[in-house]
Image 1 (cartoon, rainbow, N blue to C red):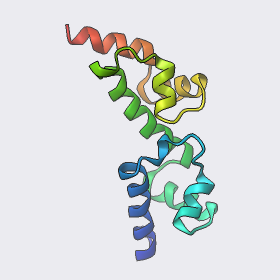
Image 2 (cartoon, one colour):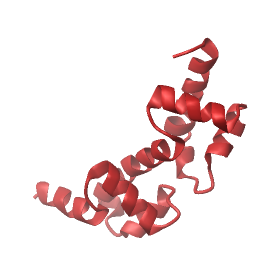
Image 3 (cartoon, rainbow, N blue to C red):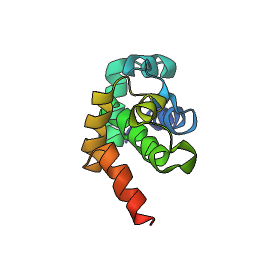
Image 4 (cartoon, helix red, strand yellow):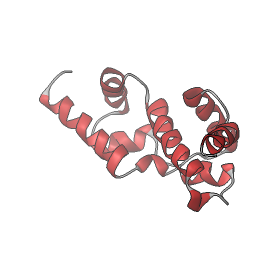
Length: 121
């Protein structure tokens, strides 16, 4: 990790993602995050690569999938369809959600939900 400024930006990124959960906003882009941080998109890309080991889309989708998994298991959200959950965590369409979910979890959201529900029986 480079300078104190880079470490400060890294912490701001964590805050934006973890605390403020901006990933849930469908229109929130790498350009939006860079502008919020007061840096260029290219600098953001380098900081994400160097500190998080992934690009913007991958990082955002990883957090979306993490939250989606919680929703898929939440008894208060049992009536939510997979599409409802996808949109509530920031995906703009079903295909993007399924692709990201399969990439990070290794299966589809519906199959994962069924398998996890069966573990509780």
